[in-house]
Length: 141
Image (cartoon, rainbow, N blue to C red; front, side, top):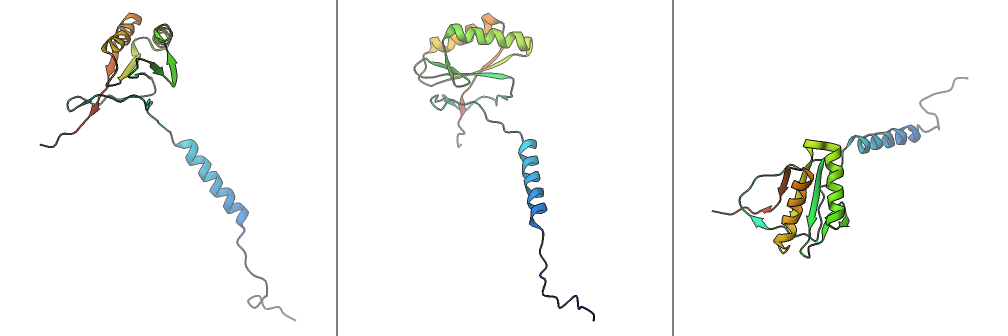
């Protein structure tokens, strides 16, 4: 008595467990392999607008100092006073020396004296590579 393989009542099933394992491994690989870059922005800072200027390249080594309209300075989501900011700048100079970079993001309504104080603090601590930012507005001619 021979058994016919093609007329069998057994249904063919695809094993799902190895397939799910492969999908999860691929998902984990792409999550780990992808670098997530988020530029530090303080949503309470409204940058002044201009149509001239060049793009400032911000990388992981750049310290971003946000100066709000009220004169409050924010670095990495922490509110700092001038003394704490000076300490943070000295730490940056000690770690990176001449490669230390600072980006100053001053609000449109921020007092000029506060922004100048931050700039003077950069020079005092030995940081010569600092920049002020603005929002570039394209004009239609």
